[in-house]
Image (cartoon, rainbow over all chains, first blue to last red):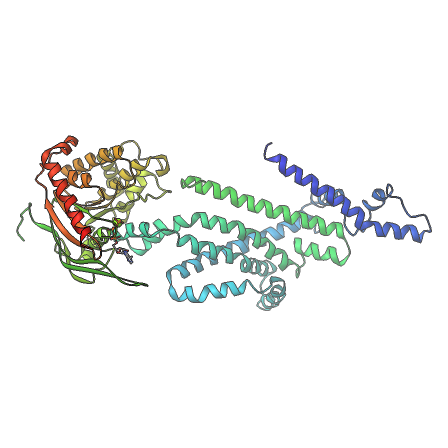
Length: 286
Length: 264
Ligand SMILES: Nc1ncnc2c1ncn2[C@@H]1O[C@H](COP(=O)(O)OP(=O)(O)OP(=O)(O)O)[C@@H](O)[C@H]1O
Ligand SMILES: [Mg+2]
């Protein structure tokens, strides 16, 4: 309860501000309607009724978004193309595949960077440069290329996800693999420890806290990548967002937006749980 | 080779030089060091900060490369000796892996050297007993006090059959009383295992109490100013420190340290 109270307070404030903003932003339409019907302008007291349940609001009200969210998840069969559960699943599968690819690539690159001077000099600057290119610009081009080589939409999405998620893993793992101090390395030297054992017994375990810190960033980045990739696709939360904006379905956009936020929170939380478990088993829990 | 157990040299330094190249120019850490350490010796290195005690110990363990002179360990180069696993090294900090239990930490060198699982387990039990940490094998390092952690790190160095034990201020961070206890234990360990021990310390009583040979060093450049062979018997209760011989040796060490300082 202690911990819930501040979170709930903030939530309440957000909802209140949101309602106020909805009234304010949807009011011009209400005034406009009244003017067209040659009626008197609505009073302040009438405004909430006229602004919070519009069909095509500029900013849908919280309860509209909430009911749209419920309707499009619980109200429809998950297999239906209109169901948000269906679209969310499409997004998650791409996210997880991309995350797995990105994390694997990130770890491999980090190992290369730590063990190979040439890779240290060459890979890291390029990895940093890769993150400077706005993904929004890159995604459509990648989609065209992937299409040309006959990749499925899932594969395309995963590649873009991986593109975003490998970077935090590289940075974190390089730091983690280098985290053992000189004394710990010297100790292994005194046993004439082969390099492979230095990696498996010292560097890799030492890097675990860094790895999990990166993973939490990477999983969120993967989700962003998947959604951006879906802006060029037929299914997934990204596709829903774009369709919503084509047809002026602001409520649908917001519902999809909220679902992605919830997904991101769940994924990061899951990563946190796994982190807690693993570090605890390793005796390194904070 | 003749098998003379006593007085066979284990570590021999002849005109040993070690110069570090730093950004501010070369630093002569060791200059003309000549020293013979025999099998079964307990040798303490004492001297002011920066006189090269750590550097010398690290050179013996092939963690630093001398820039001149010769250094042999069991008749081999330090690096060859290291590959034959001739050393157990105890650093100033325990340096236990936080993700391994105490037993797991002690197993580390055993895993690397490739002992069987059963052999590992029995060795862990044996050395835990040796350092009086029986029953703590399943604990994680953070569950132990600093002194216990340092004992665990000594156990780790004892677990494989290195016949040389090198310790760099192992008890520097501990209080006097714990230190006394551990000093007694180290002496017992030494008597039981017959290892050759190199021990760096800043404490005159510690050096005199433990050693058969005390090496007094002085800084800039790091060199040996005195080597004292202790006449104290092998059996040493703590109160030997009030004996006349003890006080005489301590005095000579102090004089040696002072002389090293005054010629600056
Ligand atoms: N890796 C290194 N690079 C450059 N100089 C070094 C290095 N290690 C030691 N030195 C220098 O060599 C000299 C001897 O250092 P060393 O650590 O052996 O001294 P010490 O006797 O162990 O001192 P303390 O009692 O403080 O531990 C010092 O002047 C030190 O600055
Ligand atoms: Mg030192």
